[in-house]
Length: 239
Length: 239
Image (cartoon, rainbow over all chains, first blue to last red; front, side):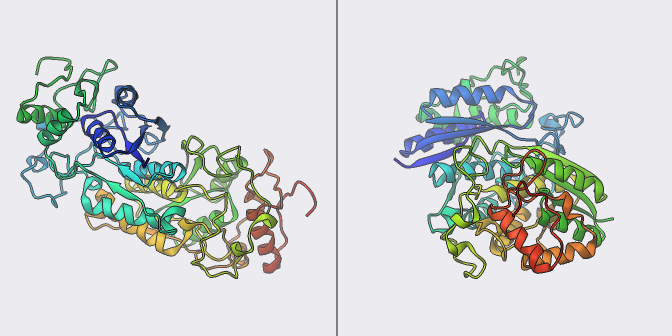
């Protein structure tokens, strides 16, 4: 049985990716990162999702990203903005190569660090496929979610590793890359994903209740609305 | 003053790289990784070197590599081999593209993980140069020390980051890439590096005494011999 490593943040996208990998017949291994993020409830969510979705092994790896800082998600001195505080260019109707408004929730090199550790684990496991929930439609203008970035990471990975050098190539799989949030949700519903178990909010409280107003909440709420699927998210206040 | 991030393992190569970066006029920021390595004395060595060599800020970042395992350096069940136990092809007179004998001390994706975290910190600092002591001459056939790998990482980094996307490019600097160990030592002596403070051994004891027989010790001993520089390394037994 082919093995796949899945980056599992505990959010809506990565839960859907995990379900897609399982549907494609992979034995799944999921990994989350404890990097001092504000939204720590997502680590619990990822553990519960891994349990519920038949993952063979789930790892939570510690990472010193708060010591690096530089993002609203890892530095307590930088507040998480409400969606309305963003310049309009971050919305989806803007050309995809417009990265002039990368928001303060961008964590420097985060996906690169996450994918690198997933790569190391994949090599040890003998897995060659690494799944990530990167998405370029309803996203926040993060440079490390773009297809050209993912391709460059894959090329690098195949020069970095024993397996890659021996011609047994790694593949970075981003099956949600060109889907809207609504399309992702429809796909997840088809696959039986319980979105009530997922947490997307950048500032979820300890019980996992969402703020409803950050970027991530806004994209998610809009997705459920457009997919005409009831939103199971527990919000702290009525939104 | 231009800033540079330097990967500082506490070994001979990275100490020399740090001295070279300082000579080139960079304000230096060094980073070490606490990844559960056997040779933990190197973390102390890197702190002392950073102090002695005028580093502006030194960080030790924790990393869950032992949880991934797969290497003699991170998995207690895999012993570190003596130099003599290696197939002959790992020696320097073998073509550089012969990677068929990557040794058990190879840590899956290690340099990729290290460079990724250095990249994140560099972006936060506003540094654009990342120095690494990678070397292809007297090395151990690690795929992630080769020039084509380093170039691929640099390309990926410039797609991954806000700065790279905005045209303010990162450079991965590996000034030792084509030097022999003896040439590295001669360069370090010229720059005043105190090699007595460095630790290269894969299984140094808590006091920093070296085994004298692992790959890393063997390359180092040979280097001092060929450079005609007295070897200041404290060995556990006469070698």
